[in-house]
Image (tube, rainbow, N blue to C red; front, side):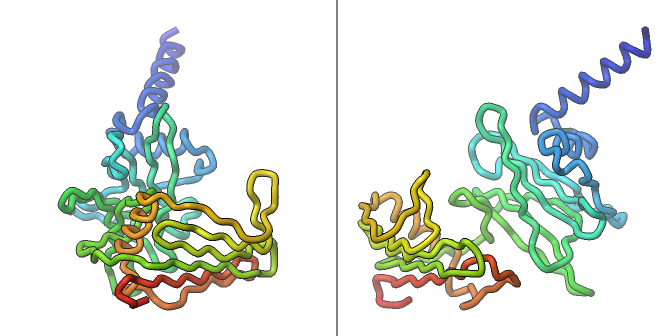
Amino acid sequence: MKFTCLTILISLTNIVFAQSIEQIKSDDDAIAFLRKRFPALDSFRYAVIASSDSSENRKWDVSDLDKNGKPDLLITGTVDRLRNMAYVILAEADNNHKLIDVTPGGYFLIPVSVIKEIGDEQVIILKQSVGTKVWSDTLTHMFGVFLKYNSSVQARKISLLHYRSTSCFGACPVYKLIIDSSNATLEAEAYIVNSDDTLRGTYYSKLAPEKFNELTELVNYIDLSSLKNFYSVSMTDQPSGIIEIVFTDGSF
């Protein structure tokens, strides 16, 4: 009888700390919450961290990253004991949670999760290393995604945005999208699906001022001048995307 009661008590305790991010108090709580909410990550384990007295050597951290009034969870670890991963679990309405992989590509991620406050922004610090070189990436949640934190955003106005998606060795969408301050034009060529229909031809739509302003803010925040002119992946079944932005001062 005592054994049965103890089993029930342990089960109820697990259910309690798995219900909300607010209730996470320990390493065990955090990893149990991740596994229960996302069973596909049942093999997730904490990576080994070298002993240190630094308060920044944490496997997980909690903060309201998307500013919706609900705390979110940042957690680092491994699913295959080879590569360290960083995940953010965003708390949404109706007790729903969204999993986002914020792992940097191509480098070794030091298994440390840190959230800091810069001004009124809650940012994620991800430490990385190659050989003896160690550096940090700083991410913030803006426009519904995680972006590299920008402390000095320029205010430039967009005149025209042109995006082109090309064909590939597969069913890749092929189209052109042209946006100005009040209009959007879609030239659909192939594999553009809208509900049950495949779009072909040219389509026009009015663009709400707030949407164009949001697009302008996003372009300014990512700071195009800091980006490379060309990025690539070693896959042939993904489309190539070509983007051109013209600013009101004539630059692009």
